[in-house]
Image (cartoon, rainbow, N blue to C red):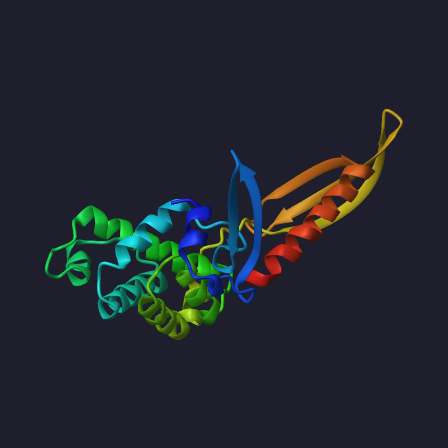
Length: 223
């Protein structure tokens, strides 16, 4: 199902500016296409495979769906990536859902909760955006309740998953002339105990400094 089809199947009030970051249209072969961007995925489009799994969630009761949300949230908090038979039976006790479908639905919930936590999406916005994507209203409420309770722990778990390289500190900074050009010589120490020597032009040093400042500002919200 395309974004355009979704937008025409959902009620008009679902396009609330509260959680919908942007909505732009273009024409493809004479057909208008609406691109929706969501807070829970950092202002990006929602992947098509998530839409397919959302359709499957409507086949289970809202109360059962809340159990699914709780179990998946617990796995994320514990950093547990293993889903054994016991876990699958808890989610699908009567076995009426095929195992491959169960695993697909688990993957979708993992994606939603991990992304929402990573981008610190509010519980209210997550509920509204899931409804915009076609999840039944009562299911959205149950997801919102679980996420609201678990949000802080999920955000902490998301922060721990960010890969961190060893930090660098400048031990010394000198300049020299190479073939008539001024070169900056940096001796760096890493938090891992390694020593690195770097030589670069003044322009490259300015570019490096500017890009590091941008990166630091971007990562600050995850610290």
